[in-house]
Image 1 (spheres, rainbow, N blue to C red):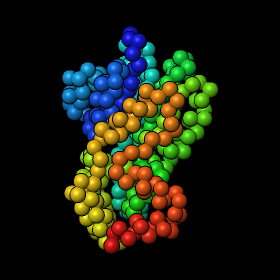
Image 2: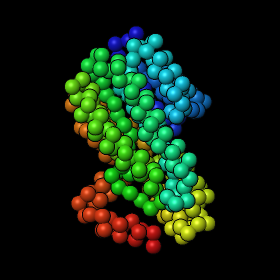
Image 3: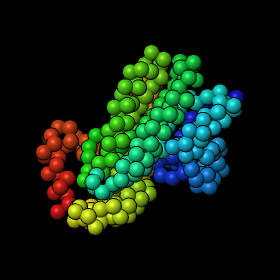
Image 4: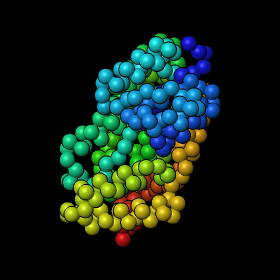
Length: 274
């Protein structure tokens, strides 16, 4: 056992999750990292992290990770729910099976892990649950219906959870990244073309691909460390904010969506595809 706070970072094999793990190690926490690809977390192990294999959609994997942490450290003090991915393509072109998996990873797996982590936090009357949303939890883009649905759901779920856990002195924090330099761009484009490249939405899909590629070629994303620093800030804060937004486009896009209304936002989104 250790007196240091124990953190679990999911989806730590790349991108934002990997940077968060590095930052929390630097901050002096005991850091467990979980992902499907153990081999992609060797660098984190070399820095002192404890890597565990977990598919967030598998109950046995989730239980295994929580039990392993309990055995060595009693429980999780800081849960970073970072595991997630995005499917893009027209709503009509996306199978319900693919849509269900999007929710399984981005909502239900995250929720189950949180359920298993909570008894320890409630018992010690302290803890932090940090949920990786997105500016996509407040805004929307063409061909992203299922992805945005999960992030909008995560925002509401987190708000309710925050109220439920206030009596137990457990903080619930939402992180809203903007455009980040990760695998995200590559991972979303090819499947989007496979779904909608030859459908009634092919023109929109092609324009989305071109716009996204052009954006990333022009240095269209912030480094993941920007988000890792926000997480670190939330972890260290005695009274963290309910939300932290950061990374390219996050604050201006959410500002436009909130204050200028749906129609103007729609025009901006569709105009960007011209």
